[in-house]
Length: 451
Image 1 (cartoon, rainbow, N blue to C red):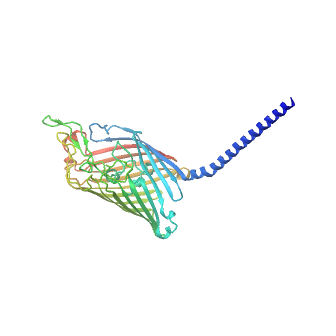
Image 2 (image 1 turned 30 degrees about the vertical axis):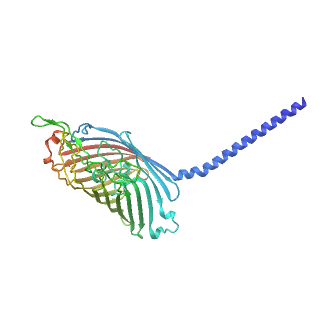
Image 3 (image 1 turned 120 degrees about the horizontal axis):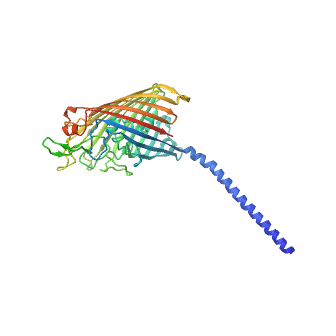
């Protein structure tokens, strides 16, 4: 009986000791995990930055031509235009990675607007003296193309108007025509070298050189896209569906993870900008060169100039771009007996676009002036320099709008536009019969939010 009692006591002691040991081991493991979290996760939180924005959009037109198979834009269009996340990770003090996944067109379209790794060369090389040599960053992957100013500031909560200027819409292709909006921002795959240096107390010189896939087209013409108009009944009773080239931009390249375009010849961009210290002004020039056709025989060259004067209450922005397209073929991509084209051209052509935009904030209120009311006005002009008798995108446009930031991370915007189609007296009867008018009015209402 006594032996059995000592055995019971021994078992209890072993059990208590084992339990205490296990509990102590668990507590030690918990302590180590907590210590690891203290060391690691604050650093991760410091190095990981996530932000984003979205916009809900309403728009309608008056005077737009009706197209076969497309919704009538003269009716109101409601749309979740875009929702984007901006994810930036500081891998080391001198290496970072950034990605922007985005959904557009009522969540029907998903794209990666950019995804790249950025290297600070000066921080990686001990002998590099940034004060003497300047700062050099190398960016590899898919990035926003450094051309003019609008594209690299593409996030809509940073822009004053929802509508893109003609320089971005039709030339440097930031966004397609409505209601598509299939990815907002001109991005491409390649490598980017960004060098900048402070010139004493005078200002900052910034140079960006990129080698990218480039704009491309698999057809015989760069801007080969076309639209089919509503059925037209000719005076003799013959019916047909004519086509019209909308000229809605030079964006022909598909998103890709490769470094080659359709002809294995990369395109090159060069952007020089300068920001003086004495005044809030940024101005510069941009250049693009690349072969766009499958054989690599025809080049696209674009030259541009931008200037931005930005203060707390006043802004003045402007861009000008000139594009030269080499091609020998025409743009009638629908061969007989298909639809008859309205604006066939052949050979080389060039395009010009420019805009000037000003804004004023008459009212700031709230904590740290975080609420305000802004008024904006913009004038655009696009000249297709076309050989066709009539091209509907040869036009000018006047836009006025207002922007109200009513809480710290949300804004309401409204804008009204008035388009005038140049040389409308040459518009063919089918275009007019399909609802096309010389003057187009447009209303846009947007709710913007970000975090």
